[in-house]
Length: 122
Image (tube, rainbow, N blue to C red; front, side):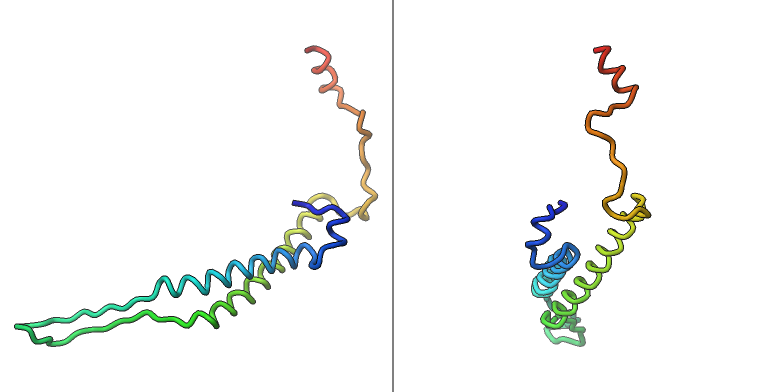
């Protein structure tokens, strides 16, 4: 949700940085938790009369510390850039060629002719 000017002035981080930190925390936590849940090992072998003839071992092990840190940093950078890009595109899409605060506004009491006629009918 959009902040009021008072909330914006009292905030520790600007809106883009706040979004980026939240995204970084979410990705960092996921990068810490998912490797511990996904760990496992597998052993496949062929045995003949109780003796193992050959086999294959596979294991999935991870050290999530570095991956969590990398995920946090990349998520913060990506979310910050994406938030800046989104606000810039939204500003240009809404006709930000005018300086901020100079947009023409209709008075509150002004109504379109079609809406006024439909209200008087009912």
